[in-house]
Length: 203
Image (cartoon, rainbow, N blue to C red; front, side):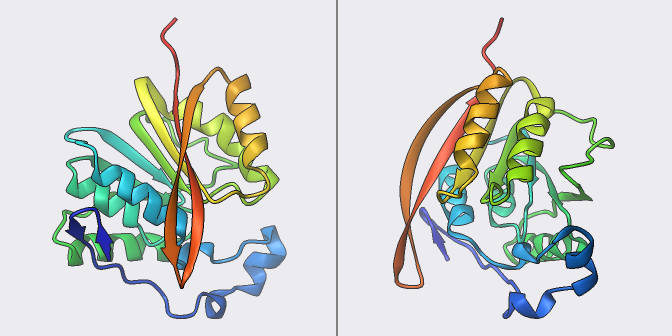
């Protein structure tokens, strides 16, 4: 896959539907969204490829197969890749290796119960995570907690229903944001992806 002037190999499951676990779904309606390479992940990776991330302490929320994390590593970041599925963390480590990058740190993280996450980061990343109301609500609380002083977040979204709620809640949480959009072609269709850059203004 071409990302800017770079080429990346990305391995992901051939059939995400085959990974559905009925017990997981019955418990919390969890589906293996991690197993797809979404247009928002491509858009976020392209943005990261344009930036010098040397030494930036970075976390990706809902890393899936990990393309943004791999690109951030290549651009010099120190990356913690997180997801709700252990299998996703296996894939992001594998994808880092096959692209010649050092492996990221990895951790399981439930956005709705993140009590164990006490670190802060220079850069918080997420791609296509606002597909449920509860995600927008949880992430609008979690992301401000994760930001170091002077830190930023980059959130990529393809126009999910709950993205406006997230923007509203992020504003209420005291974060400023700027927004632009890009087009990602995938499977012979164009997808418009909105990229939000979030930060906290110094008092």
